[in-house]
Length: 365
Image 1 (cartoon, rainbow, N blue to C red):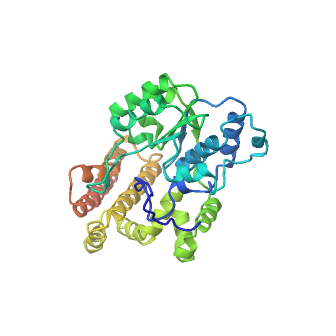
Image 2 (cartoon, rainbow, N blue to C red):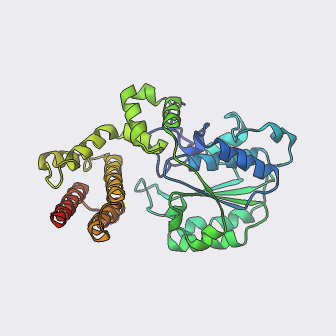
């Protein structure tokens, strides 16, 4: 698939858009989840569709794409008993279908997409889905349906709901209108209110396999925009996340990954010159994606470190690693919330890691 083009009537950019690659509402292909699609078709045709589906799994594996594909499918086939569905083997509909075009531009009256709101003045997204966004559900369901069939709400992603927004959503889930369908995209179900989880049917999606990753990247044209070695390395480093692979490619992530690995391979010693060169890449204009990716790469390194040491080290020895891992996981949000110097945030993270490693070595000796 070719890269997306910008149009004057396009909706605002997606909160987690990677470069100019197609966003989920524009995607025509879903990789790696064919069985899930078949199960959804069977539930829809059989009248067994739960009013709220919780689509879970790691970030970037196709959950939002699945949500939009299913929404388009249901809106394009409002009658579950339609004989035309007998031959349906996946959720695809033609790009030329009016429903596809309306969903792509955010103009379909039967679909409400809730996400972090975009501020036209600052040209940035809010850090959370607000209660005002969720309150749009009530008038949406209260309006007269012009197309018949289901009215669909996609929450993308449910992890971003603040407390008030989550409570407002819960009220709608507890008393859903007739023919309401909620599709909640969620990276970490444990962050949701237990009462929200209990009112949804959970569908767990798995990360893509290596072959599926490479097929998806080639299908999207990544091999034309980047050399084959970079595509292969991105696929291998992405842990089954297509979004992560694209981010690695767009943000020069392959080189970033090598730089992180080289610096952390000599702990507790830090190559300060190399570290400052790396941190400099996160502080200039247009470096948001680089900063986010760098923190993500460090967090992944720590995650693997903690898991590897969990079988050989006592709990007390893991406490320091767990603490710095937690700090890293929140680094992006903290830097954004308090307008911190991102270069200094990166330097502090690496020095914290070095100190934890130094302490762990002292305990072991």
